[in-house]
Image (cartoon, rainbow, N blue to C red; front, side):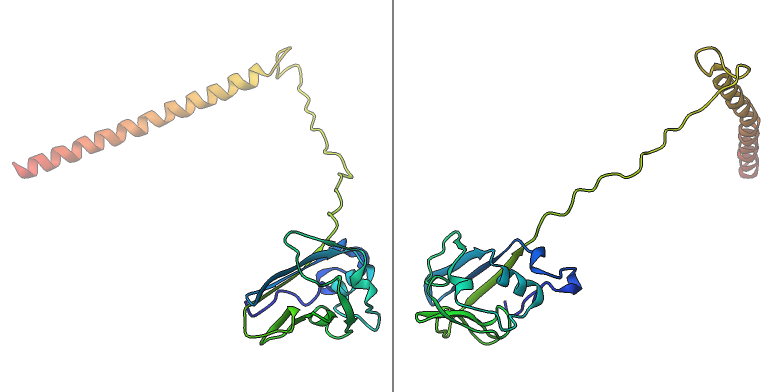
Amino acid sequence: TTGYSHWHLGPALGYTSADDVLDVRFHCSTSLHSRVVHFKTSNEHIRGVAVSGSHGSGNTVAHWTSGWTPLTNHSASLPAATSHVSNVAAFVDHPFSGDSGHWAIYSSYGECDDYGGAGDYSFQVWARLPAPPTMSPTTSVPTRTTTTSPTTARSTGDQPLKDNWFRKRDVARQESYPQKSSWIRKQANHKTDISNNNA
């Protein structure tokens, strides 16, 4: 791929400080060698860069050489071999480098524990965020109550109302039958007229 999703988290995405990030994970690989950079760190400065996109003037070698954890397939010399750093362009332009290789992401090439070259490079930087807070209801759902008068309900239910519903349904059925019968008569007369015309 030749693009990226986000430069940093930033206020536009709702993040404002290092406290909004638990740790940052780095991964890179290249077709030019088999070494893989894959580690995470909870260093406060690095977490802050993930949010702000800027080192300011506070990047140091110690931020990268201590407090990091190797992850699956990590085999590169970086970040343990970091000997110099840059305060330019967050995690893109040589944030940590060593004598045996660099980390750098450019539009035309990369450096992944090496000095770059004509090959394929893959870079990924991930920020792990705290779980969202558990929401608890602040109001209870009201319970609906109904009352029935003795004149419309029997002692244990609402049979009079139910019986009334059946009576209305039966009346509706009776009212529909004449309309249906009339339709059948008209249909029969229509057929008779057709028969007479064909005679």
